Image (cartoon, rainbow, N blue to C red):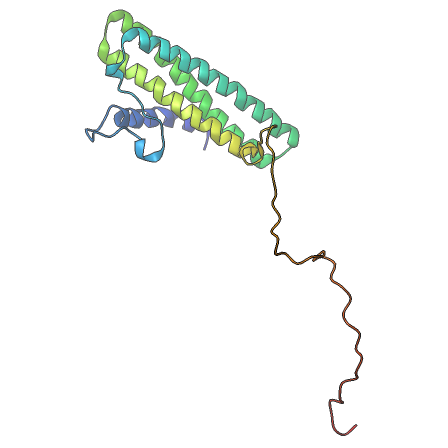
Amino acid sequence: MSRSRAIALLPVLLVAGLAAAQGAGTGKAPGSDKGMPFLEKASGVKDPEKLERSSQALVGMRTALREVLEKLEEARRTKDVVKLNCVNQKLTQIKGLLRISETADVALQEAVTRQDSTSSEHEFTKVMIANQKVGQLRAETEECIGQLAFRTDENLSVEVEEPQDLPGGDPTRPGAPPDVIIRPPPASPTL
């Protein structure tokens, strides 16, 4: 998918997410059955808190962008084209979401200044959905590089208990076969 086409699809994805986030009247939290964090209704958040949360989300998205850029450099150093393509795809999506979020944050500030609750709720919801998506993309980037499979804690210790009923010896070095003491009878009675 080309970069311009991916960026063109971002508003469509955000609008779909907005519809789900603003509630379809189901009474369930959007994404609650899929393990996704609950996205609070924007109408329940006061304007100053919307501005603060939006700013915090932008800081988090910029941090995620820096981390993904580091992963991109790591993929370049290893010269692994598959990892590089995977990380680059996630990076492009994060850049697009960040750009949309920055625009939405400015529009949110303007809407709060005008005391336009409908616009402020809409812009706030856009930023929050983009923030969730960026977090998901950052996790997918970790999977691209393979960090999740190999990340361990330095304080990790492993205890191995050997069962008591195991046969002794090294199974990779079997003993010599027993010597043949008695010659078997001939295979044919004519000999």
